[in-house]
Image (cartoon, rainbow, N blue to C red):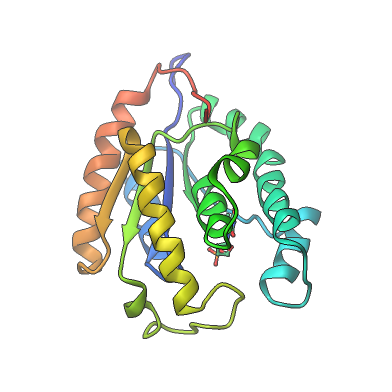
Length: 211
Ligand code: 2DT
């Protein structure tokens, strides 16, 4: 690969069980089939020591103040920033399931204000595109294994959905809202179409930061 060609940074966002995992996998398979080096990640990254604390919080085995867990989620992204930068600059395209937008949406849904929630995200590498899988939270409960983790409550998911809409308005220039009630294959066709086009545009474009 010629110098200066970097990978693209794609993020999937949405309420719990909105199909992010399936669509991330399909996009990774699609890009790989086109010969593009691809790496899939997700946040929270539960393997690190910070990630393990987050995992015990999410599975309800540990309680923490809202502010503390919020900062741990942000710290969990910061601890992977060098790796993300390195991979992108080496030409690998990243497909990331959840990022700062989940951080802001889930904590604001608890009542904390935007500026406070967003502050620790400033300076993180900015994605080239966010695919926001929009679905009515009411539909989600019919999907498998719903309700086991801390945030999988319908009322809370409604609040999260509202905050996502506000974030989408603020970040409109790279936010792609996709109706997640469509069949899996149709969703994938839309997403892969956008990703393929962006993939070509980002080559040679410097990495940007969240501001
Ligand atoms: P998964 O079920 O997708 O693993 O998500 N969350 C996630 C936050 O509250 N803040 C964050 O910064 C991130 C990345 C969303 C686990 C849950 O963690 C929430 C759902």
